[in-house]
Image (cartoon, rainbow, N blue to C red; front, side, top):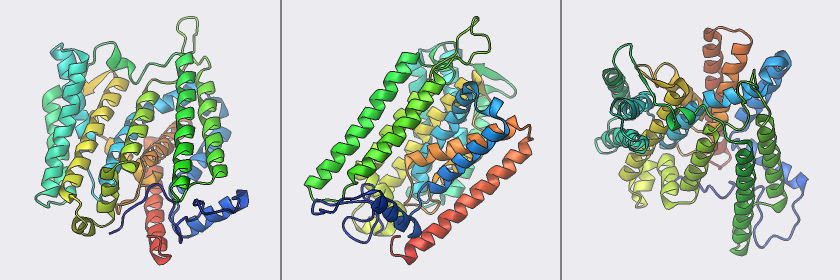
Length: 430
């Protein structure tokens, strides 16, 4: 069985590169950390490194070409709002991709759930919490049916989800009406992907989040050392904490600037509210994958389903539950799309939504072969795609250029994934 230990960097010994055990007395310095990381990369464990390098390169390139447009806080905030739905949908797709499966219907699942929310909140006038609950239940139900067909009957997920892709596209048209729009009521549903947090709340959330991240990582490392298990060197923990703090606090400071064209008419500053949703999902879903038995089972099934079954893992339930989670997150993504567009149409969740979400997960580092991926991969990949789209738009490039560039990047990411897995197998790390 190929299981993934999400708390330990793969290595040749019990501690592995970049890790120290309780019995280690040697001080780990920057040179050792860099050396261990290079050994890991040469062994095929590159993670999201290509996506991070690509993101940094594109940001630098567009900043040089259009510094007066790309580097503005207004454009930065718009980029976050525009990419949020794809990122959330991509986070849901990570679950099925970890199994080596695919969900081609995720985009229209998002649209259908948004349609349910729109009908309940607007047409029926029901309370917003009830409408949101119905939309979430619709996503879970769709995932349950698709997952059951895949897990119980053994129908390939490509076929099942393609059938649902077509069926849900028709169902959404039936719900909304051809050429019609269901407008969302003013308030929470519109604000979720349009409003900004008060400046003080953005700073408070950033500080609390950073403190929680640093404290939990430090506590976990110290606990593993006491138990004699592999642990992250304190220097590496400190470097990661500092880098993350600089990025987060810098982004908050940038977004806290006034970015309204006419501040006298309406002030516009602060972190977009949708960031809280994305970060909240990232934390909860990462804990679910990394800190629960179910999460370990997901990686095990993705690595080798038959070996996982023989080890006593309920493979059927793992598959069904992953499709249900994908459906639930698709419902959240559908809400983000509808909120950004102020309503639901017959094409909500259609067009390139699914392709961009799958591309975001794969480009971020999630493997198409199963057993390898993290929630943060979806965010990194989603930001990379958003930067490509946003930068090319600023450069006055046609949509065809964006599609060709994104396709090339996706193909490159899949190639790197295949080569890294081959390298991992050759070096005994797979």
